[in-house]
Image 1 (cartoon, rainbow, N blue to C red):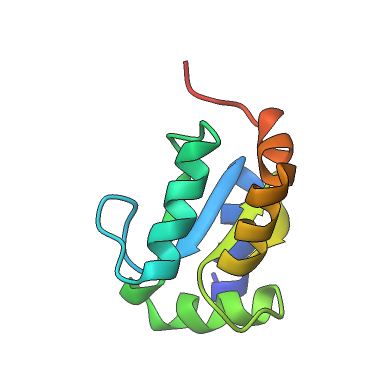
Image 2 (tube, rainbow, N blue to C red; image 1 turned 30 degrees about the vertical axis):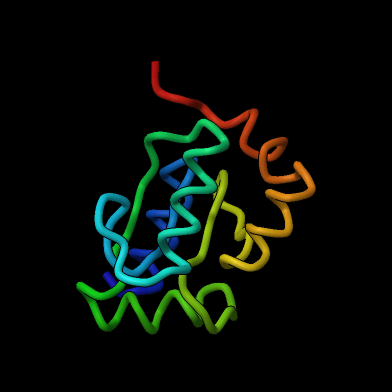
Length: 107
């Protein structure tokens, strides 16, 4: 399976996916740390995190998949939302919270 196929399968099979550097418990950049903090502040405590530092093909492939040059990248219900800056703007306006309200949360 190609990197694009793997990415497509991941984002369509999981309600919330964050392509990031590192892991939610140990983010490897400030932008990834802030993205996980915003998700947590929105009540999303469980999501699919993909560490792009573990796979060079995925790291490059995710940039091409959404035509977005930076990481982290957030996907909700299969749709690309944006990177850390977009997430921050949406969080500050309340838009991110609204978007994530309808997403399945663990019991």
